[in-house]
Image 1: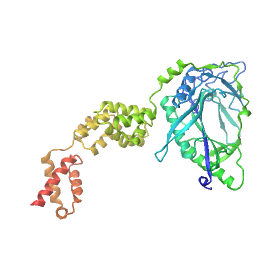
Image 2 (image 1 turned 45 degrees about the vertical axis):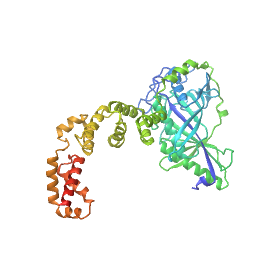
Image 3 (image 1 turned 60 degrees about the vertical axis):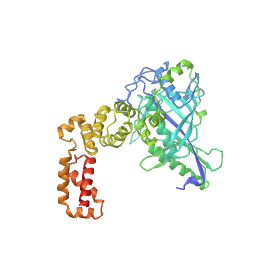
Image 4 (image 1 turned 135 degrees about the horizontal axis):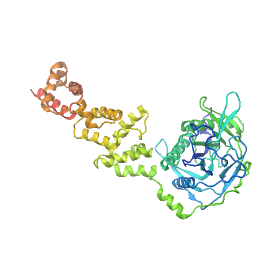
Length: 489
């Protein structure tokens, strides 16, 4: 397709729907269950099935979770909130309307800083954060027909709507990832897109560079990953540009993303707000949010990722990259901070290196999260201590860490049981050096003749004879002294 960036400016806004991890549903007492695993239609009641005469009741915990998100996204909290009926007909909507918020949402006029691949940052506006209930789940059968599961119907859902400040698929991906990270830090959403508890839908339009008017937009659905968000958005930008370059017109519609074919496809014409015939929900009173309630929720917020990154750089002397990697997940950051607290004051950077370069590699290989591993923060610090006091060398320490990861044993126990303690005895090392030099007379002659790069070869041979347990610093020093003595002889 035509590259649109030469002629057109993409204008993108994101709608993010996040199920809130409350125990019960938004307006009834039904338990919130895993819609991918629970038997269909087992967590339902007359309220969430939309039976006549049933009255909804607002879930206070869902409101508090929504407040946490709105405050974390720097929104202004509106003290007076109204729920509304959003009317449309679809099999997964048992009442034929969805209880949502329209004119008076919970939070407005927020913002979020995102980091881009080139190292720069950008502020994206957050237009609104509002509460609603989720719909049921449809399963379309290959032979025709569909099955509906209402377990998800009525689950608390938070909608986060950005301003149209995003201008590429990569920016959309960075924004979506940052929202997901914050939701997980706040403990209100798992971020599992494959299970549908987090859904990201970009609204995409393009306009000639220099123009201030908005183009016709399309909404993209069926995105089950942030990779699909970036690729689908880029494809849709290119598709619209090709249409305009041919003299055609972009149609306002909802489009899906075909993950295997990497294309978008038309699903239905795009509805406008008036098509939903919004009106205030008559069965729910206005929701009053007091200053005291806001202050209490604000005080309960955890340290958020950006603040952690800044603190890690200031307090621990970490690079921006290392700080971001360690704060990507709240559980990893907590594990790292526990390790740093158990280590000497100067060792934060060393601990960070071991976590990023070695522990993460083992976690990725075994597909385990930080909550699952058998290596404790204190155990890693104990291992680092064995390296720093030269009981074992760095390479041996990596082997010990792998054994700790597999068995949960302590580093000292593994070192003792396997006889891995480092050889630092100078007499023993000197004897091995003599044997290595005697076995390689041509290389010794070449070294003494000026090929000093052969020193690495000699070190490798000595370490091999010592089964990798030689103290590198002692080996290097004694070998250099021995060769220097031969040169002077």
